[in-house]
Amino acid sequence: MRVEIAYKFIMGFIIVVGSIVVLDLVVPLLGVPEQMQQLVSLGGAILVGLILGSLFSKAFTGNIKVITGAAERISHGDLSQPIRLKASSFPDEMSDLAESLNKVNGNLRELVGKVRDASVRVSDSAQGLSATSEEMTASSHELSNTVEQISRGAEVQAETVEKASRLIKEFAINTELVASSSKKVSDAVNVTVQTAQGGGEKARHTMDRMMQLLQDVERSGEQVVNFGDQLGRIGKIVEVINGIAQKTNLLALNATIEAARAGEYGRGFAVVAEEIRKLADSTTGSADEITNLIAKVQDEGQNVEVSLRNNIAEMDEGRKALELTNQAFEEIIDTAVNTQVKSSSIAELSKKQIEGADKMVQAIENISQVVSDNAAATEEGSAATEELSAAMGEMAHSAQELASYAEALAENVKEFQFGGEEAS
Amino acid sequence: MNLVLIFRLADEWFGLKVDDIQEIVEAPELNYVPRAPESILGAMNFHGNVVPVLDLACYLGLGNQAYGERAVVLPIGQTVLAFGVTAIDRIVPFDSEMMLPCQQEEQKELHIGMLYNHEGQMVNMLDLPSLLGSLETI
Image (tube, rainbow over all chains, first blue to last red; front, side, top):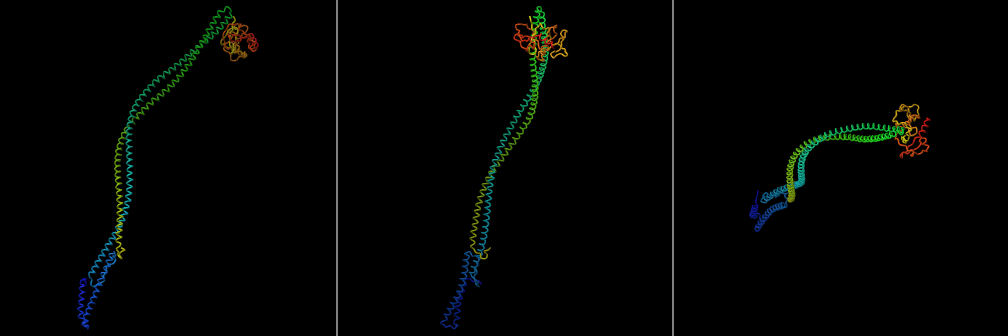
């Protein structure tokens, strides 16, 4: 049965007062002298009061001591033991207080446990977060490196694209040069065709003239041969004359001999014979001269004949060379016509090439644009990656701080003792 | 007036007095004479007479190939003979002051009587009696 402390005081007082009364009644019955009666009853009452008071105060202070000790424990963080008051048939406010303190203890234990769990979890999470953020920092560094490489690659790409653009422009210019050159070639080939045709015509004309000349020279050769034959005939006549002159000479000699034999009568005849001999001599001389001249003329004629033959051979060679020339001119014309066709097709092709090159220049400029956009984007990406890296560093730092906070919290919470439940 | 016929035997000039010459014949048609000496070229028909032709150059030892299709016929009567010579030069007047005596034995063997200087040209004058005398022995 619950009795409040105030009532307990009141009841004690009542019991003391009641005991005084009882004693007053009892004591005379006990045969105690009168003068002693009052003293005994007073003594009895004081005794009762003392007993009650000591009992009461003992119980009260015991409870207070227990509660104070528990509060002291709690204040030191020892939450392991609940408060147990001595069993009392009359619980009072002390029990309530103990109970409340026990509730506080339980609540505190629960709270501390939760805080400890939470701090452990926070610590774990913070460590995990720290690790993750470190990994992320590393990854972001890698990303940053990669982005830098991409950036460098983009610069190289941009340079390459610029070079390609320049090369293609040069190519386009060269192609235009080729087109204009092939046009010039076509014109030159036209001129060449005309010239070659003219040359062929002239070569044919020259060949005709050469043939005529050849015939003339052959005729001249025949005439020279005839001339030689006639000279030979003249030579024979001269031989005859020579023979006649020798015979005349001999006759003159014989006439001289006959005249000498005739003596004085033959003297005139001897003079005539001498004159005849002289005539024969001069005839022989003239005939010899004629023979010499004929020999010379025949030599000359032979020389003329040889040189005419040489001329004929040379003219034949010339004719052959002219034929070859004519043929060469025809070949030149054929080749030139082919060249014309080819050069016009080259001109067309180079026109198409110029169009293609323009398109390529356009495409390369588009690529260049995209590449420069890429470069810019890559630079932005690089900056963003650096920011990300910095943020990751900060985050790692924060996670480490958080972990240290959690550890500090756990350290703080560790002061609380749970008794047997601490293992959990 | 004496005349001398100058003719050539091989490379030597010889002379013969015109009085000792009947006629000069050109390229006579020669007939083969059997068993004749080497120096007899053959026989020719001279105005109906058979006249042997002597290769004078060969006979005088001046060479075998010197006959030049000319023959000098000696006067018919005392002898019947013709000399085949290399060439006939001409007939010149004979100047006895230009005769030089010949004393060498060698020239005697060639039947050369005198040397005749005709305008600087030395001509061997044939000693005809000596030559004909030597011919008798053939």
